Image 1: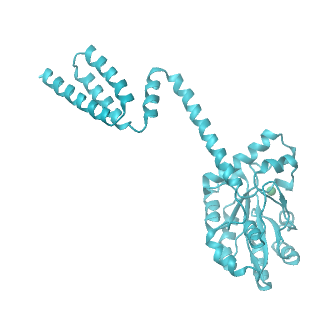
Image 2 (image 1 turned 180 degrees about the horizontal axis):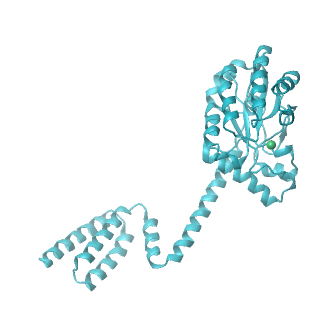
Image 3 (image 1 turned 45 degrees about the horizontal axis):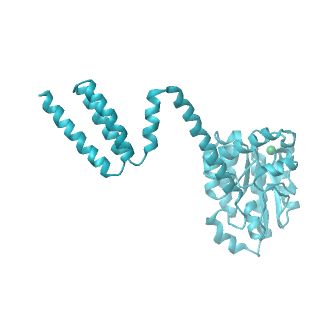
Length: 327
Ligand code: NI
């Protein structure tokens, strides 16, 4: 009985070998039979060994396209240390890919519409509305940011958020909603440090960690950057990789925490091409911004993101350049 079974299995093995050779995986076929012959010979047809042989043959057929996988598996069995080394290599590879992708983001130009869904609306207001970009730093948050998002459609408004990297994963659903609505997501770097005081390596970390956090949530890197405290130097400019956006209307919302003052500061200073600084950390800020939109819409204003503002003004924002307004 045993020899009959063995015979059948040997026949099966040779049929598979023929198929494998026909398939063109000559290299793999040469390797595996060497192993199978050895095993079968030593343990003289024990069912367990035969089973193993059959299994590895199956693997060969499956691996026709992924030769690398087979090689890795073999190494693992021999030397666990090698596996560790291999994992590190894979990690390194991922970093390289991320860097390549980052270059793609840097190539983002404001001659494109940030959100294609807004294109028709933007064309309809081109040349006949005064434009203002409302921007919000230091978020995201849940309640205040969400309240702001809830009120944007009423004014056909989209805004720009400069998010802090270390808040991104905690408030990922808010960020994702903001992005999907067509608001623009910029970086306020990772932990709100004064970038001009940092060593280059730390500066790079602040920027890159934020880029990765944001990409994990919305699928793309931030399109703009605003340094915390508006503090930058030439090193910051060259490390940014994207346009640096400052402001020319400061609501001082963090200081007075008064919705009427927020509203007044915006309305009183509003002009075509302005960029307004606010923080979506306070209820008074969000309420004041909504009040201001309510007033300004009757004065012929449209509320656009920074990149939409550049697009409508026919300007291309350059990476590493600083903008206080776009006229
Ligand atoms: Ni800030």
